[in-house]
Image (cartoon, rainbow over all chains, first blue to last red):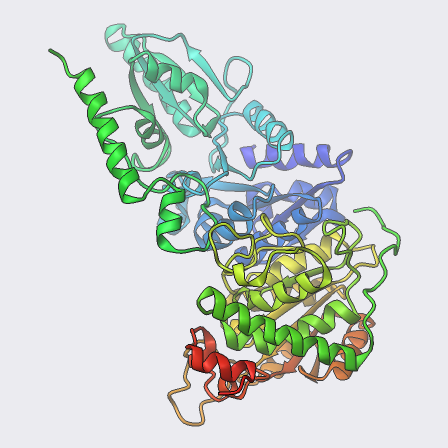
Length: 306
Length: 282
């Protein structure tokens, strides 16, 4: 079974006791896993037809009335066709809608490039307040669903088309599948299965045994990843996503380097107003920028090797 | 969703004459606020004002002192650029005290477009056109089995957005008779095709299009409080989703604005023009 099927089945079980759970689907229920919920709870299933934009905004309307809607489609159609609806109705409006994007990543079978979602993590992680999950096993799906329902964040769960087997250990937001080493692989989703296979090859080739950290939650970055960065260990990232904008980029973006990023903070400033007032409120007034540069220059001086 | 009891009464108005007087006062508040804050969307705010006021005063069951009451009707101003009209009505009803003149300031909850995360009484954020009807459809689905209703106001220019028709098609299929749309048909959009003499309205054959999508349709004069309240009552009793095409005048109430609807889609006025708008002696 695909992970989408596991997702649809578990949501059906949860909905037996949680009346808040609804599922919406854009005419891919038999491919993305929503079919299980449609059969079990037809009264709380909405077949939106091939109308992803309407479906996403509808889900936000449902959640504003107390529901916990789960929106299913292929990742490509969900993230790309309905991006403005996700931006306005979910991220800006802070609605606890969960987007379930099946067939994410680069292995789309015979579907080809129109059906691939290779920068969906970049799109979702750059919208303020949306948690991004990348399960790699049925157990991961269970953990992610329960975690999402236990908070009220908007969330995006990306699932591959390929069925994925169980992983060792107990699912959590992030866990070591191979013990930490000086060189460590960090991976998510299908990438974790690629990493496991690659580690076996490595060991056979020259006995190298890097650590392997599997990130079920890709964004916000789990603490374990930040710890690795703080410890200065080498990291190899393997992911089913473009190398730009995915897990690797999110990690690189968290590294303190000799680049000082000055721009808008990852939130919705959400304010109308005069330009100067808006810039000042976000630390972007000229004097604030100058002060930031001065501070940064001081840090550089202190850390420059003698 | 649980079935809720009908606990919220309609807000009492003092009759049609009172509503017309209230609208006149709100129009002056709106142009005064725009002048104080440096301009805004005069045309659409003034064309939609009577519809918004009539809805709140004659039809919606809401509780201004408890804006998030779960048993309330829902209202969405999908044409969010007309926010000032909604703010004027909500303030008059007691949802908040913030002066309208603070519209669009960085330290104000009166955002350029309605923001549910900062202002009481906003049932959903809008500003990116075409999304409100879908949100309203979701609300209507969540509230099915209750006696609550969902009202969405769209612009006629907004009906060029494809998402509006996705929602129209799906609402008819789901047969949500709790969902009601009102279209502020002022005949203009920001720029559109007005440079072409005799150009058709933003969406030609609008009624025929909604009917083809399976909606119950009605026409109304969008500035006639008696006709508006009667039409709203009729919509409440309909067995399918209803759209009310409200014929309005962009910039209603001020000849200076009515005569130049393209400029007054969003603009500023000088002191002399402001004096004319307020009817002050020269």
